[in-house]
Length: 167
Image (tube, rainbow, N blue to C red; front, side, top):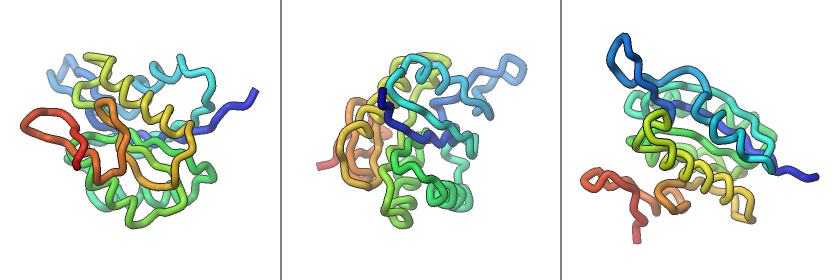
């Protein structure tokens, strides 16, 4: 049986956040519990998960993005999903696109933590997996809210709280 291979770089974001009952805040953990819950039901893909940054995307800076670039350049696998916060997902996508051209990279995330409501994170991640399992050109894409598009064609509308396709 042939399985596709996807490397997942987990940078944190709302996708991974969990409620801390002691501090009373949502925190980005340094683990992969949210991802593990999704991928345990995906039988035709061999996942390699690398937990790399563990931050809210509002805290991600170009030094973190450079860590992503260097990590991606070292990967043999060309199929990559990056779990990322939605507030700066477009900025990171552009940063990667300007520096990497030989990989298929899909950034995804969630506006609601997986620990609170599983549907959105699962949908966005699953669409990224399906997208990488078809023949697409090497480029940088975003998978959110029922669409996978080039990083500059799927943008967050902060007034509506959802990602929309840019015409």
